[in-house]
Structures are given as structure tokens and as C-alpha cells.
View 1 (cartoon, rainbow, N blue to C red):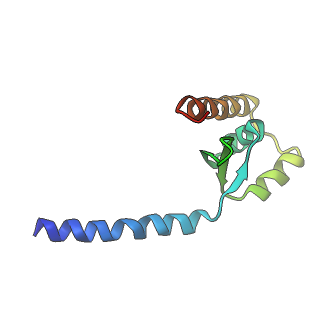
View 2: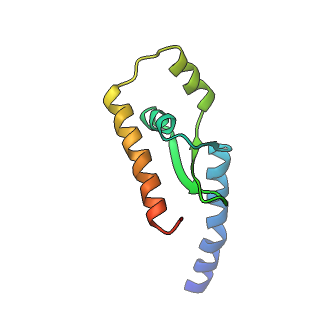
Length: 102
């Protein structure tokens, strides 16, 4: 009986991941840590990655176009939030490169 539950749970897992991916939509790929820091401050989901050229990039999920319009229209955003976001983005780059991406 436990084996049957395990099979059912294993079959359900890909569906949950697939549904989450549908909700998030396709990511916007950005290479600039400063812009990514602003998106982090605006609470976008950001996932770092490495491409085939060994360059670090960021997959940014959410309504990137809306956030860019807000940025360019000078909507207020906390400077410390932006600085902490930039710091986090740069730490992601360092961690990926230190992990073997040379």
C-alpha cells in the first residue's frame, strides 16, 4: 500500500511543477545585476543561471514590463531596498562562479 502511495505522489509531482510554471509564465532573461537588483526590490522572483558561454544571467518572473514602466515613470522605491537587491544579485553571481562555472 505504501508503494502505491509513493507512485501516486511521484506522478503528482510533475503536475504541480507544471502548474506552477504556467502561473509564472516565461521568464525574462537579464544579465545586468543592477537592473536585477531593482526587480528584487520590486519583489519579482529571480533565479540565477549560467549559459553555455559560462556567463551568469537571471531569470526574472512576473510582469517585467509593468515594473519597467514604473521605474521609468519615477515611481518611488526604497533606496536601501534597491541596494540590498543589487547586493543579493552580485552575491548570486559570486556563488555561481565559485561553484565551478569558470
